[in-house]
Amino acid sequence: MMDRFLSRTLNFAVMGLIVASALGALLLGYHGLYRFVTSRAEDGVGAVVVGIGLAVLCFVLCRHRHELADS
Image 1: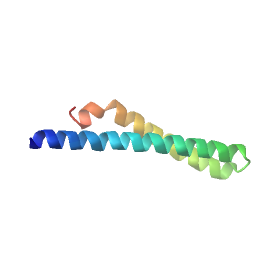
Image 2 (image 1 turned 60 degrees about the vertical axis):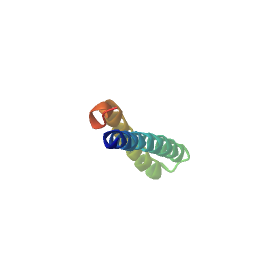
Image 3 (image 1 turned 180 degrees about the vertical axis):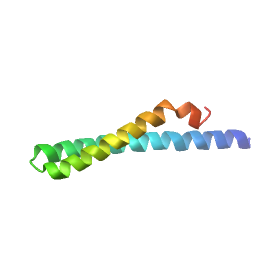
Image 4 (image 1 turned 120 degrees about the vertical axis):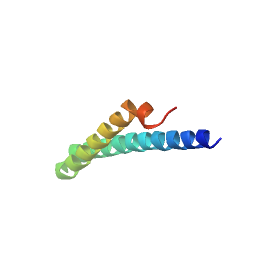
């Protein structure tokens, strides 16, 4: 019973991190692109760089999800 609870909690936490990083990457990427197009490039570049970092984090979490949480 406890093993199943811990396994599901860990799986939920890993999936939550994946969803949060993907959502952040999408929001910051589009926000940065919008800022870049509306001639505020200095604000947009920072948001795009952080968005790319979150996208890489999401990719790594997705790739190693089965190693992080046994599902």
